[in-house]
Length: 255
Image (cartoon, rainbow, N blue to C red):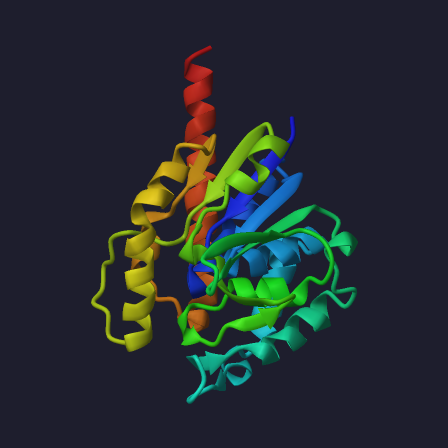
């Protein structure tokens, strides 16, 4: 059985993906193909390269993300993230989709044409970074004649790109539709508005997953809570481990 793993966007909350994947691997569930958008594309690239969840967490602990975000006033966003390309080059020096051990599909949005695009071959770093460009917050990235922004604008749980390439789809969604704390930053409000605009389409994609992992505790975290990486990892890990145990118990009770 071929397993497909679909990773949503969610800023720092995407760190929960790493914990979820660790729990899946402990249950001997490993993806044969990965589809990701935004932070899910970033984590997906690391996993597809062959890094283990604990290794990815170590990389995050060693990387201070804020210095890589360059102010971009006067252009088309508050920030530019070109410097983050150095992070991907450091950990995936081959910088190609073809070099990855597990096939990866990255979803991005062409902000000019309004099209959803997928990349699965050629240069890796730029499509992954473009998929993380929250419009209004980050400047679009120019690549192959397109002005690219966050893939989550049109598809924040990209199941469609790999639906016909996997027998069992696991979706990990780290963008809760309800929040447990008030929004204080303008950046959080911008992103929150984007999430709510995608709400109905994302809900429909939930139904296409054979297994949906959506830790409710993520509603306590913001998209820039990188300093809470360990907590985010644990939320993903504990929730997924408990979910898998419950599913195993239910299957045994039915036999």
